[in-house]
Amino acid sequence: MKTLTDIRTEFLSFFEGQGHAAVSSSPLVPHNDPTLMFTNAGMNQFKNVFTGLEQLDYKRATSSQKCVRAGGKHNDLENVGYTARHHTFFEMLGNFSFGDYFKEDAIKFAWDLLTKTFGLPAEKLGVTVYHTDDEAFNIWKKVSGFSDDKILRIPTSDNFWAMGDTGPCGPCSEIFYDHGTGEGKWALDKDGHDLFDERFVEIWNLVFMQHEKHADGSQTDLPKPSIDTGMGLERMTAVMQGVHDNYDIDLFKNLIEASEHLTNGGDKISHRVIADHLRSSSFLIADGVMPSNEGRGYVLRRIMRRAMRHAHQLGAKDALMYRLVPALIAEMGEAYPELSTAKSLIEQTLKSEEERFRETLGRGLKLLDEAKGEMSSDTLSGDVAFKLYDTYGFPLDLTADILRREDKKVDEKGFESEMQKQRERAKAAWKGSGEQADNEVWFEIKDKHGATEFTGYTASVGQGKVLAVVGEGDMVEIITNQTPFYAESGGQVGDSGTLSGLEVVDTKKRVGEIHSHICKNNGKLPKIGDVVELKINSERRNKVKANHSATHLLHAVLRNTLGDHVTQKGSLVEADYLRFDFSHNESLSAEQLQAIDLKV
Image (tube, rainbow, N blue to C red; front, side):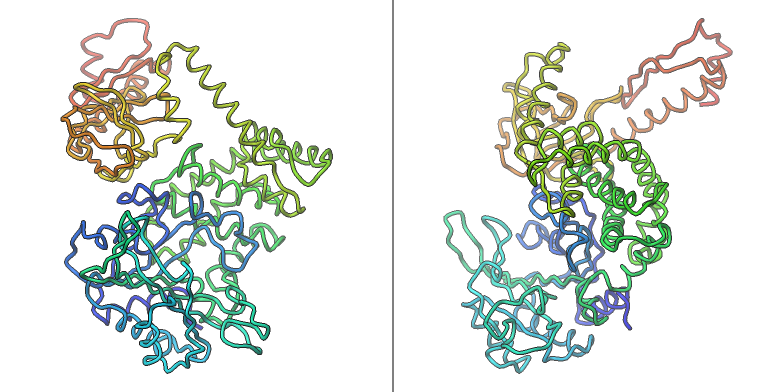
């Protein structure tokens, strides 16, 4: 039996043999697309190539792209564990042509890989095309020998792909595998009902980028049509291993077995959730995302805590997730060495988050049980759901997941109402402190858009979508949805650099969570909604980082030299110097200063 690793390798090797460059997966945080929370398709890293903004030294590529679909527009979180094919993390195999080959080669490559390399029976396959795409229909007939009724013409957007409201677009052709037997035509039962996603499962989507969509809705032909394809590796592995459920493939069976071994068995759904969420959590941490209460970090926290609640439900007495990391690395570490590199960080993050959550999980579950006993309908009140969130750290979807098993739900509107009340209380408290008390604009930005996503732990350049331009005159402040610019905090100065041609002289943190780029106004300011290029001054950043590290060294040496009573009272970290304030009962002698200097 071919393993998931075998199938990934054979796919990439096949296309390398057809002149494609094998390209590594891009990170899960897409620095070149501020409209995406996470990378969710193989084409994401090639977006600027397809639009003509970027040139590569090859015209054909193939990759196995790690993807996350949780949070934002694409969110499969609530279904994971309950269905056969929903995941928060998955791999997408793909082949791409940047103005090189087009439909005929793309279809022939797909057919040869499936029927010759993978050895799938032709009679188990069926395809769809966009209803007006006669070219693809005729190519499929020629390449596969299919009769007309095995090539369905689909008139809906399912078979027409677009990058956005404007830009490259084109018809799709989807390839399906028949997992069953029985009467009826391809993709339909004997009564004519659609059996997609049940008996007939999509395994590959071929996108033919041949048009340019304009703001007025019109379309023109692209001068160099391109190809973008996507095959779910887990789905393909299920087909190759003769199972109808992705969680029955070798990778998931091994992860679930490891989970069962550490918990002495238990509920099947819980082990499926843990296995899936272990993958997404570990890969996100390896790519620089850390659990927090905003943005990407909060999506990670939701995923982690959902799995941790299931571990608790299985009877795990101690933190479980971090103990499963070696099993994950054994399965995927060779293909993705970043897992091994970040092993300690992944384990430490999972362990500390689970231990912290366990402190409140039991009390929160007790409150929920009491509330369920008082429910007069099948809906939990929003104020109880909010208390679980605010006091006990239960993300809303975790509460919903618990109730789902009992056919109950949450009053989400009531929850949002309580959340808004908390925002108003926080705003009033901030004003009362006297800091930024006269500046409503920052609260409005935060209420509307949330906190700024900081990508600077793993990147020094990136793109951001402009959310606001504040001020006028020689200096303005520009807010983007994400940025690699570090905002002044904890005594460390903010980054400088450039923002699409504007000089960024400093970066400030407004109302605790908004990164504001302080820019010189050159008369060419971006508009709200524009995507801008962000680039920090890396040389200055490195000097600041070195001085920041020096403050920790200095603190340790002071305690070692003067005594454990020494504590930090403040600091200022600049690129060219640092200041460190500390407590001590007398001035330092020249000899002490020299000794401290030498040790640091």
